[in-house]
Length: 522
Image 1 (tube, rainbow, N blue to C red):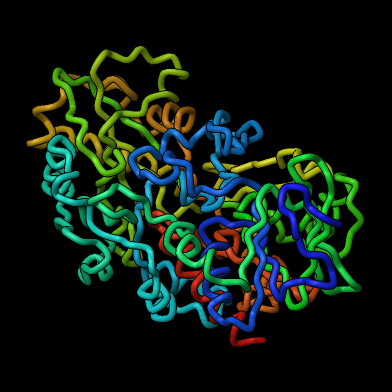
Image 2: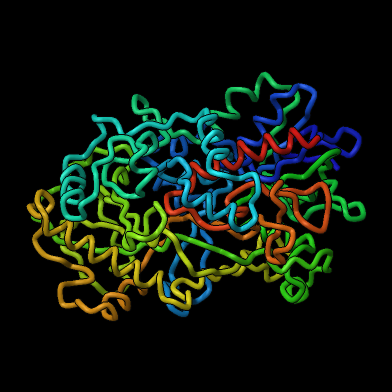
């Protein structure tokens, strides 16, 4: 069947070796690496347009303009028992995916996080291997340039270092002490080119340079994946819906590689009959493989908020507006990774507090601490077989039985209060506006914070990899979907646990490693 949006869309007789579903952060890397071999053909099925001529996607300073734009799926959660029910989860339909719309705070995978993966059955995914893959990245990553360093934020960094007794970090990814301790304060390492403010999206640095010169590489736009096509128990293609509503069947001779992200990837598997039998039955999808882990294990960084009134204007200087922060271990006996990760924004974000009924003064500043190692687990479930119907997303924030997530959120706010009381940040502070100085007990703070927390857009874990004896592990350590052949998942969905730092560096490293594994197994 031909595709009117993409003349020459492949049919079965001219099928590529690989079909990659989703040209996002991971998909661009997998595609570029596999197509380095001129004997290998690769086709990407991207639900949105190219990012090549979209200035909002190219300038990292304009990342917020992509949120709630025409590219944003703007997923909503079901009502939350203990968290904010008003979470809006940005996911992008555009080449480059979420790497066109995030701040590209990019961390080398921390050993303590990755050791946890290995302990959960992710053989071959040790920290040394992922560190080597991180070093292969072609996306520029650099500490925020001096010209982009906001003087107010610099004051917050200095205050954090003093108040929290953590070291200053001039370059987090090359600082061995941070890797060994998991603590610090400073301006982040950002995926961008300072001279141009060009973001280091994987589309820009992996695909754009080779699209014109590789005849073995094809990107098809406006192709929304509906379901995976099987021949027996083998995945042989993908059915898509084009922009005009027509259905197209695309085939692959070797594998289908799903890189649609931690929400869309499990939804696609479920629409294809792979998932929990009760979910599929309710959605009217015939069960192909009973896989109870598909859509389960959803993790996210829940981010709290504390806001102060200030009596002066904050300078606008920045790389992204979210250029610095602090990493804090609350439990000194814990592994060398943050328990709380803080962001120090240039422009205070207080929307959720305003929705909560808080009156904001004209000038405000804020700190946003997040729960770095969430214990709570949510789920993603389709409600029918229509790919245009948003899935049910239930984060189940703050439902871990020991209450660790809740305790870390409160600990982050208390740490932020210490920062605000310490020079030189203290000179910027007039009074605390939210949660407010009247709230002092853990219960009081928790109630206000859980009602107003934000997402950091770090959803992951919904098709996690693991050992053969783990019934909830959707993928084997080669990222192959269990119960079928010819099908893999490569994106944040594969994470056994969420990294304690912003995950984009780990996602890119996973994609580099996945490409190595796939090439070696053919």
